[in-house]
Structures are given as C-alpha cells and as structure tokens.
Length: 614
Image 1 (tube, rainbow, N blue to C red):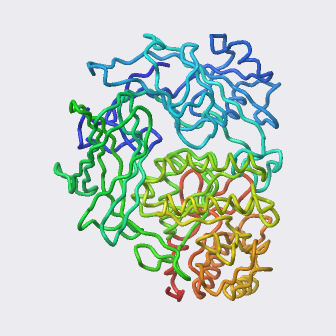
Image 2 (cartoon, rainbow, N blue to C red):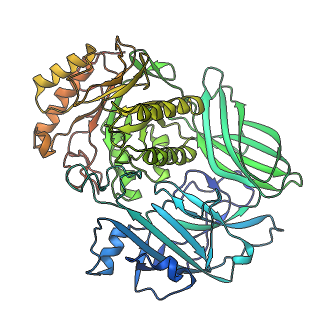
Image 3 (cartoon, rainbow, N blue to C red):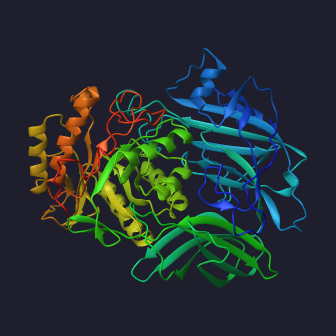
C-alpha cells in the first residue's frame, strides 16, 4: 500500500524531456518526482452520516477495502453489504483511508513543499492529514465538483515519517448539481439516463512543488495573422519579491536543445495566487488543424531573484476558429464539421484512447464530448491526432438560482484546466434545456446564459459558444446568443429527413426540432449563423427505429450524410460513437475500439457523394 516515488522522466531544472509518457491525469507537466497513491485503501460507508460527528478522521476501524480510483457504486458492490446495494437513490457518504511514507525530499534549501492532488473526486470531498483538516489552495474546506482536479499544500507541522490520509466523499441525487446524464431525483435511470458513477474516479498523488511556482494551468490564445500567442499563466507565491517569468518555445516534432523563441517578463509578485497574461511572437510558426496538427512545446519558468527556477511544461498550437455567416472558419478557411457524439461513460483511459483513434478512422474531424468530464490526457491526444473537440458543461437537472450557481462554478473549473488545447474549439453551456427547462419563460434563466455567453467571448475568444444545444437558442433584440444555430433531428425515414433539412435551411424556426429553435424575441435566420445538425442518426437505438444490421445502418448513414452535404449546412454530429447502457447506437466497440462500419463512413468525401463546398 506504499508505492515508491516515481519519476516523470525529467531531471530538476531540465528543459528537454527524456520521455513524453505522462501517467498522471493532467496535461501540464512538472519536472519533479511524485508518489502515486492509487491502489488499495480502507473503505467504509457512513449511512447515518455520523463520521464527522464521531471523528472518524481521528482514526477508526474500517470494515472493507476499495481500489482507488474507482466509483462509490463499485465499492459498495464489492463490500457485499446487503443493506447497501450497488445503486443508491438518495444520499451516499463514504470514507477512505490509507497510510503513506513521506518520500525523501533531498537538499532543496527550503524551496519546496509537498502538494497533494486529486485528479477528480466528488461531488463533495473533505480531506484530513493525520487528523488535521486540509483546505485546497483556493481555500476550500470542502471541495465541490467531480470533473476536475484540485490540490492541497501540506504544512510541515502536520507531516510525519508515516502519514495517515483520510477522505470523506458525499453525493446525492440533487437535481441542482451538475451531473450530466447521471440519474437524479428528476431523471431516473433508464433510456438515455445513466447509473451514477461518482466518488474517487481519478488518481490521487503526492509531489514536491516549489513554494513559489507556476500552477499547472495554462491558457493559450493565438492571433494567427500576426503570429502572436497570448499565454495566461497562474503564479502561486509564498515569498513576495521580484521574479522573472521566462517562456521558451520548442518545436514538438523536431526537438532541439535551442528554443525557437525565448521571452523574459519581469514581475513583482505578492503572496497568493495571481493570473498573468503575456504575449510572444512566433514568426514562421505553422498553424494547427485536423489535417496538419502542428504543435509546439512550451517550457515556462518562474525564476526568483536568487536564480532559483520553478518550471512547468505543456504544448500548444496556433489556430483560429470563427462563426462567420453560414460557415465555420478554421484558420480563415471554411471547414465542414464532420462530427460524432461521444459519451465516455465509465470507459477507462486506455479505452478512451482507442475510441479517439477510431473516431478519427471513421473520418471525423470533430468529436462532441457530451456533457461529461474526461481524463485531461484525452484533450492532449486530440491535439496530437488533429481532432476538433466540442465540450460541454455537465448539466444540472433543474433550473434554479442554485443550479445556475453550481453550473457557473463547474464551467469555470473546467475552463481553468483545458484552455491550452488547440483541439477544444466549441463550448456548450446547456443541452436540450436540461437544467434550464424554463428557458422560454424565465428571463432570469436567459439572462444567466447570455451573461456566460458574453463572459466566454470576452475572456476566452479562442472558443465558439453554444447557448443551449439542440433547440431553444436565445435571441435578444434579434441577436442570437449562440455562435451556431444547432438542431437535433431524429428520424429513420429518408423522405422525412429530406423534408426536415429543407425546412431547416429555409429558416423555419418551429416544427423542425422537438421544440422551437429560438426563444426570447424573434430571430430571422437569413443565413446569418452556421447551421449545424448537432445530433442525428441514433440508428440502433430502439426508441428511434431505423436499421438494425450493420450493412443497413452503413447504407442509411451514407444516404443521410449525402443529404446533409447537398445543402448549405455547416456541420453535423452523428449519434453516437459507442454503445452505453440502454443506448445501443454505437459504431465503435466500447472495449476494443473496433469499428462495426467501414472506415471513413462519416467523412465528407464519401464515394458517390457530391458535397456542397462552403
């Protein structure tokens, strides 16, 4: 239960990695050692929620063991407690505990400290070290959320040669929390609603970090016409003073000891956390696109006035995405979005890797990651493969002031950690009005969505933003508060499909999708916005009908895709990549990644197809 420290393959202060293998669920690397705390933990359920009152964090006897990472649902099943079956319908509280030996820190002259990081855990997480309560770097005694990482700096006076780490995880079926397609008090498991999968869902690790450092959060915006890159970095400072932020950019494919560009930025930093934007010029830099996914390596160093260096490394690409008239433009070129809907569910990291390669093999240049959080390394893989990503905030299931507050917090947490990926091009705030069911009648709901739409445009101009995907987009004074006019269209019947597409491109706002395409005040399409059929197909899902055999399905997809490309439509998203629970409409084996249809089926250049070019 006490693994040895493992090295990333970097040496301290190095700018040239000996390997790019990253076993931790994060996309920004540190040149340090870490101790992975995955494996067997002691485990106990707390059905009466008595643990806090009775001081379980001070030490207790645990009845079971559980493997971390893993879900509370699996751990409940493995505990074989007949009083607490695998599924739960209201509240669940679980406690985890293990010991670890403190690694040797070496002679760092007091520059470093230990940091504990959870790759993702939730929905509500509390942590104790040797009985002392911990607060996150953001100052949270209780961390909320289950899709992104969070960290604790460990105080020296709390550390022992052998340490006891205690974690309390709580969740419930509250419809006001962001949960995507997991069941809740509003939507019960079955059909398109899935069993909950919560708790200790990603790795946890201990590492040495510098007292004064850059956090593993990097935002990247590029101005491709001027070969400018804007980097947004976050400093964490314990010792105020003068520092130098040094950025070095290297070629990703042909690494060289000499950087392509170097820039120094003097900063006077106070104690605490601060964001800083800096700009570099990269003359001659190659642009990133699905056809040519050119990447660059960024080494960012924070250097104190004594010359001590704290370093992080990540990658980035230069690209520009725009919604311009009828088309989506990538790097100032019209680009048709050949997309597929992807719901990772409980897939492992290795399975998700296979899925991404298979979606590329299907001919997709876009993957819509459907209201779920994924391992951050998957975004990096999309960067390398040249897959555009459409990401979405896991939705709450009710529309209230609290659900909007939770939604906003989840959005900001996700943004902080995936801003550097050129593959991430589109964000959806909501899907099919889940969590904003009163969007047509409640001005407060529309006001919140419009506020977040403008927030993203101002603070993250490198993304396109969709307000509510599928239907009920918001119009305010005739301005659509969405960069794409999207519609979810399901029918197995080819003539009906042709009719729906004709009505869509003619600008009909009602009777095309399940609900009107626009709410608020009138919006007149007149080809002002790109039209995207962001869900279609569903062939194989019993409720949608349609062909059942692989051969029939293949031919139907070809026919439907041909109709899409014969019209002035900017993109489409076939539903979906893999089978998941009751939804049996996948084209990719969820375990092996094998295709059940021919490769290239979803590409625009299908044999016999005559696409209408933008």
